[in-house]
Image 1 (spheres, rainbow, N blue to C red):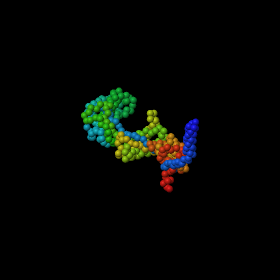
Image 2: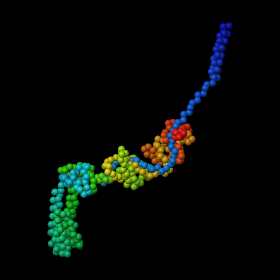
Image 3: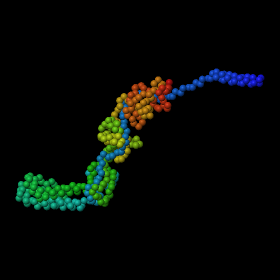
Length: 373
């Protein structure tokens, strides 16, 4: 019995010690950990609304404004001319580009002229008898008839009787056959319609030329056009006569062009509209790739910000009393890196660099203000 009482007392003492220890531990005051609140430094810019020029950038290739493809309308062997018919050869206006052998056709033309002359000679006795008052004009025409020169226009008839007489003898038919052959003879020689350069040559000396065959390409290297595709939403910003800055790919050279035409049709697949720009310069070449900067118009009371500052395309972070807030803006134009927005009040401080983890009510400090202090 005494042994049991001893065991119970020992257990009670042990439980009491545990409870006392727990009480002492719980009642002990823990030191409060004071954590420093991190305040991020931000870069800001003060809004001053002003007139922002809208510049639309687009790309395109140069095409000569005066450009012709040369085709043959007659058949014959290509002959030598004063200059070689090779790509890169320059020709002045009126110089011979191509000469095709026309000996056979020329002989046929001379035969037609002779037929006309003989027909006129045959009717002269009848004219003397039936139309003595008109004999002199026909006689003068025959006297001035030269087989080696283009046929002159037939004398005018003064009465229906004379007209029917001339027509009935086949004079008009023979005359117009000769004139048609004279026109065709000129097509054996192609002359430069303007001063320019040959950019493509598809035939060589001695080649048999056939009607409809392409011979080459001839351009005027002084003036070019470039067609650029602009988003249809900006078509109201384009104006004919506006000056355009053009740059090469390396941005080492620039030229000034002018919008001369605007296509009235929107491309259904790309929803763009083509603007054609006129440009000239000594360093320009056909097929050269250029970038155009169109000064469309100016947006008044606007501001230009970096595209990566926009939140959900229509919002911007601002700083008010060292606390981040967000405002809604109206984007009016976007290009590759910036956005022109409206709706910001003058004096508003906006972020100039994105802040990771930014949110409304975030405490920040402005770098520029710290720097002044």
